[in-house]
Length: 325
Image (cartoon, rainbow, N blue to C red; front, side, top):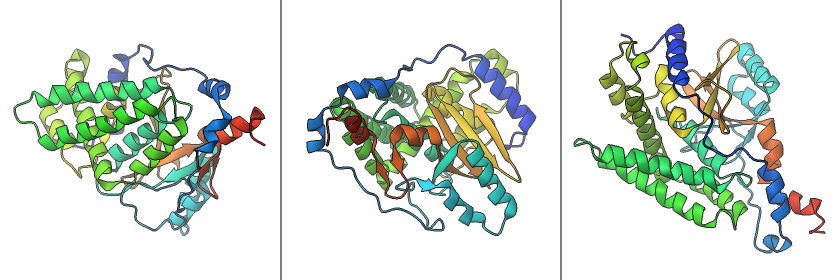
């Protein structure tokens, strides 16, 4: 069987896998903007400094991890300024509510990087509850313990998980007292090449765990797939995810990937299927490469400014309460 699974076959697989995971998300779905608004204190701003990033305006510049700030979606047109269909696809993305974009390093790990980086950002948002981070830590611990019992396990994957758990322990400790600082520190950490690779390895191990768990699904077995082949593909660094393998990372993370495929027109895939997910991960695929997308709803919630790279959310909340002149 070809490693590239055709679309109809992949859809059938997605339907089968999603059907076995229909329970409500374990993540809380609460209006945390309102909760933060009640808790904002003027003294917070005596220690908070809104960081400014060196904005990446040149879309041709290679990134070693991910872009250090959101790039206005209009700038993305420079990638294909001589390709009218590509420019039209960017216009379609805007119609779908996409306003920003972050580039991912194209080292063959970009799907895993795009999903896990966006997930890390999402669970550390100022308005996201600490339970999101705790849940992620529990997932990694479960996956790491499962994998470490295998006789042929690769210590590099164990070390990667331990590194990410250490980061999560830190953010869990300080998240509720300093939500803005923790978010900004995570954005900074995501620029670190060592942590970036640790995150990619962690994401791959999570996907590997998801595949092995799904092998227990009798309906899934009926597709007659060579599981050993896909296990090897997932755990091979610089081996890009493709076909139905894409579903396993978000499946275990309890989130939904919204993938915008840029061809002559934009085609949208959601996986796993369903509307139960609190965390949604918008990404785009073009020519086998994956990047991260930013929705207008996120931009409004974050109060993000493309011109300066600043997140104004806490400052604005305090202003609304009249606590800052």
